[in-house]
Length: 486
Image (cartoon, rainbow, N blue to C red; front, side, top):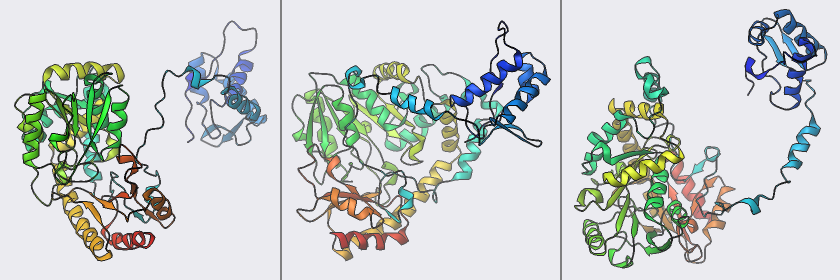
C-alpha cells in the first residue's frame, strides 16, 4: 500500500564535496532503486524535508524537479511528489537478492526445525467457500462490531493512555485480571487471586508456557487420543515421552493414565475433537489418581461458554483441593480467534515462573488489547455476545443434527452440552483426507481426522464438521454434497 514517506528516510553528508542538491537526488534515487520505497509512495513536502536536512527549500524543490525529469518522481497538483510509475526500479537488483539467499546453508545452521507438525489445515480464503464446515473461525454476523469499536476507542482515550503506552514489564492489565478473577472464574467455580492469574497470547501460548515449565527429557506426559494436535506438537518439543490415552464417550479414562506420568493434559468441558464431556465421576477419579500418583493436570477449558443444551459441569480446578490443576482459558474462541488472548490460572509459585518465562519471549500481551477486552467484558458486551452465539449455534446444531440423521451420516461421539462441531465417522475404508480434497472442489470444507490422532494411519475415516462458521440455511445443501461424495 502506498505510504507517505518520512523525511528521516533521506540523508545528506555535510562533509561531502558533492553539492547538496546532487546528494539529495542520489539519496532519493538510491532508495527507489534499492526497493526501500515503492511506486506510488508520497515524498515528504519540500518544506518538511528542507527543515529536517537543514538546507534551503529551493534545493529540495530543484532535486525533486530533476527526478521528475528523469522519471523517478511524478508531480501531482496540490498533492506533492510521488514515486512515479516509470521509476527505473532495478530488476537486476531484485534478481541478485534472490540469488544471495542461496549463499547460506540454513539446514546446516539451524539447531532444530519446527516444521512438519501435523496440524489441521484451515484455508485462509475459507469465506470464499459456500459450505465451510470448519472449526474455530469467527462469524462476523454474530459479533458486536460497534461495541468492540467503542471499547477500543475508550481504551485509546487520554484517561487510559497508560494502558496503551506503558510497558507493564512482567505485569498485566489490572482491570482485565480483576474481571477474570471476580467474574469469569467464579462462573467455573474457581476462586483465584490476581497473583494466580497470567494473561497469555491465547490458550496455545499458555499451554506452551506450562509445557516448558513442567516437562523435559525423562518426564512423561499423557494426552488425549484423538486430541488437540497443537498440544501434541508443543509437548514433543520438550523432549519428554508422550503417551496417548484413548478417550471414550465419558472422556479420558483415569485408569488408563500411565502410573509414572508427570503431567496429564485434558479438555474436559468439550473434548477436542470428539466434543464429549468428561463425567463428574471421571473428574473426581482423575483428581484422586493425580493425588495418588502425584502428577499435575493441565485443564484446557475451551468452549465452556457454548453449553446450551445443559448447564456445564464445574471445572476440574474448582474440584481440586491440592492445587495440582493448572487451568487454561481463552477469549479467542468466544470473541474472535485473531484476538489471541487467554489466561493461565495456577498456584502463585507456578505463575511466578510462568511470568518470568513469558517475559523472556514477549514481556506481556499488548496493553491496549488487554484494556479493550477488559472494557468489552465489564460493560456487558461479552455476555450479550455469548448469549447471541449460544442461540445461533443451538439452532444451527439442530439443523445439522436433523440433516445428519436424514442423510444417514454417522457421528462417532456426541456432545450432550453443546459446543460448535460434530465428530463424524465415514464408512470403513474411506480416506477422509482424500474426501476433504474432493469436497473442496465442490465448495465444501471439512476437517480430516488424521491430525488429531497420535497415529494418523490408525483411524483415517474420521472427520470433523463445525457449524460456527456457516449459516443454518447453508447446512442442508452442504451436508447433501458431503453425503454424495461418501
